[in-house]
Amino acid sequence: MKKFWNFIAIAVLGGVFGLQEFYMNRIGLGIAAVLFWWTCIPAVVAFIEALVWLFRGEDEFNKKFNYEQGSIQGGGQEG
Image 1 (tube, rainbow, N blue to C red):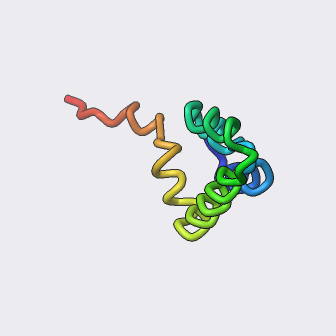
Image 2: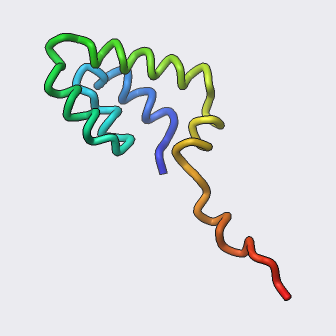
């Protein structure tokens, strides 16, 4: 389960190296960010991504990244 505030903190503090991409299991983007850290582009992208998620909110974040695994159980019809 991905935590909203952990993601925001990682994006702001470690965004220059693309750490938020690794946290969200987007390994390819994380590797690209590491390769281009010296351009500061990953830092700008991370900051913008953190702002976008701050405005969208924790509920939207959870809908996108933390689908409820328990909702599958017991969801069928009985009888």
